[in-house]
Length: 608
Image 1 (cartoon, rainbow, N blue to C red):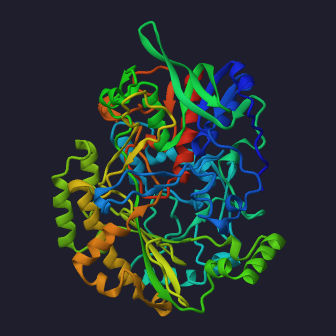
Image 2: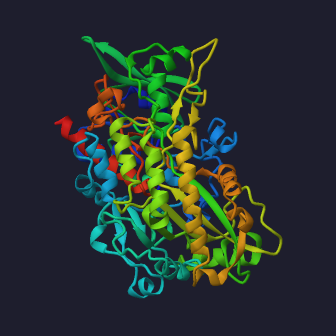
Image 3: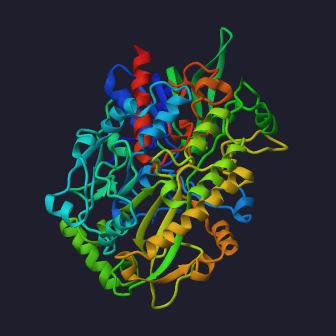
């Protein structure tokens, strides 16, 4: 288990230091950036401001099999969206990590990369250096891969190419030693449907069926997350916890806006810390745009309603929000199958699992949802259906022209991209389905990878005071909103029919008794299925884009340039998931670390 990083809650001492760099947000990207800067040059003094505390001995964070138990708990910001008309007026919970390590301390530990074309699309928008070939070294730099034994690889379809992984990075990644009893059915079922096993699923194409790698340190069988970058920490790295940033101090220096410090509150007292080189904003896709706007950097219309003086007119701050949309289809399954639900409901089984985990770091508490596949839409939809979807995309205007072209190409049937992800595991993952006494269930997740739905995150309007950091931002993903969102419903409907086909294909079909939610009748009726989709869609917790790279469009198309420098402000960068200009087909954790590694590399280059 990772040693706890050296942190402090002495804000007075922190504020007196002369910092070269201050990183706002000690999360997935922030700790990686800060650690790399501190390690690169002992003469740099690097500070991190983190709003949350430090996890110490929390089994819900450390033990892999306890995934999801920390969501909604003390380490979660417990945010939610505004009501979504496209979801029947529902507001969705939006878990985000409020803890040192950020959301990397709360996520499901999945570790994968998108396809080459996804990153090349970023570069095609006018962001040189952000294509696959340039990013690959930074992916590898973040990770240390622990290959499975030959026996385990053969038994559980753990096909992989070890040369595609890094060998000396801070984040430890591995395959589990134990698996759900349904995993052995996953590969042959998808193979029977023409979806091949992909042994090089991190090598430039994630299309196919494969067993997922996870951010788990195998010897201790514990979560590996962002704190591993700073354990032990460098002596010139100073981390202040329970520090809530109010604004970035932006001053006019010879007619140019310059970031010179950060104003924050710690233990009820306000402080200002000065920065001589750069402020690096790594607060994530929700709070990075929030902090920019609170600092007077944003759309004047948004800022004026919040009574925030405009310092830099930057119209795309908080715009371009893209997220993965997810459905949890539930099936009644063979009741003899052992699942984590059994452990949760049976004290003897729970005690036995804990004893096995404590003894040799194996057993049910190491099992993770690793039965994945990414499937091109052309493999799912008919030629006619695909043409209809492409024609509808022609008329959409939610994205600028270049982004729209890329989005349309993803529907033309000529590119082999993972448009949709399916994950299968035992248990009922649908909070809207109550289950049934004496029955066992399994979940097949269907996750839309390239959403046309695009929304925003902004600070809210106030009447009698200026909006502050204590006022939650308005998270409005516009799920299924407008014509572009309606296209997402169309795609989800098409993909639901392929999901049903998976459930009816052997050998997986041998353990499935019947569809539970939606019912067989709902699956067979177009209108009922679309209504079920609207009422059951949730987020897969992968928001990106709210401080996106502008590329050739510059400040009219984004918030930062290709070196992640905020347009219009000297000495200020954003380094986190919010800089992605377009969503990718992947769980985004590994990509965020790669962004952080590349961001730190560029900062160090510019510091010379």
